[in-house]
Length: 121
Picture 1 (cartoon, one colour):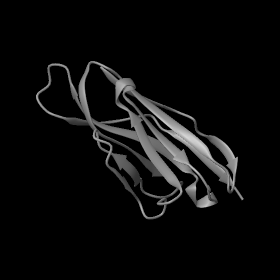
Picture 2 (cartoon, one colour):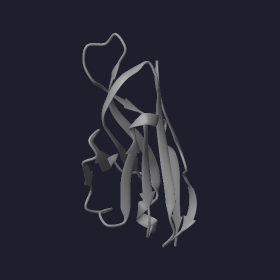
Picture 3 (tube, helix red, strand yellow):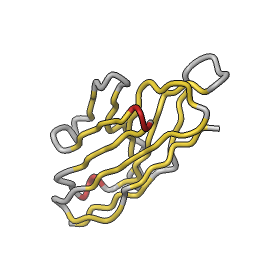
Picture 4 (tube, rainbow, N blue to C red):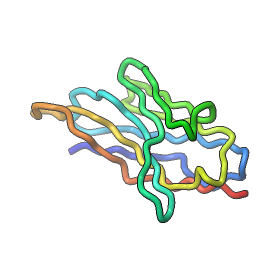
């Protein structure tokens, strides 16, 4: 079994900051990309940021310059530092990992359960 567990969501005023964490656990052999997506009420889930196992990062234009993704490979953990938050950042944030399980052949996508981020104006 593999689990991705997020933490760090909450309520913050516009202009504030939050830091999300997500740890992957279970029978994991290796992790490739890790990242974050989000889904606002009434909207489709959208990609936010990705980081490779080598540390290469990519960001959606809407968060570039405000959000920073990082990871600790020893802890199978990915972080999302969110600064200068805006009300339009309000969403459920989902952690994502592309990983290989013990006894499996290839890499598969795994998702966390989501953590709510609410930004008040």
